[in-house]
Image (tube, rainbow, N blue to C red; front, side):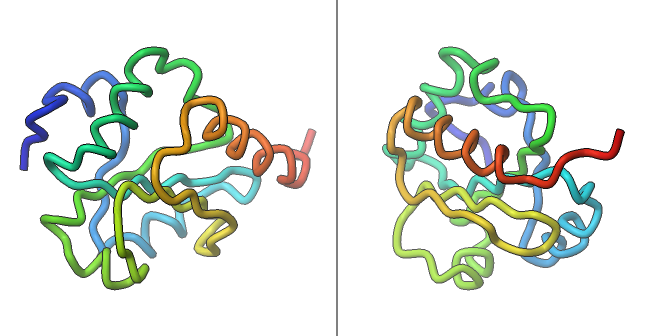
Length: 129
């Protein structure tokens, strides 16, 4: 379903769509030295719209070579919300392979968000040379 507040968000900020039944397979594709960030959102969710607006303001700030973005609209895929026991959105889950290594609930602001992601990326094992 189309996002009404930011209809071009996913064109301007590319993320791979994923559903509850494909998530494990998609996560299994990950490179061990990389993370996947799953953005769980909903259409017409005010806090989701705030997060999207912040990401669109300076998209380069939210891109890291070792991170791949995934997304799912949990209003259209309630099984994903059930899987993670969500009580509110947006929620961002960081995965290394299929293991959750971090969670950001709500939108903490751009600086706190990018700082938390950078901290997780710094903890990754070094890439082979």
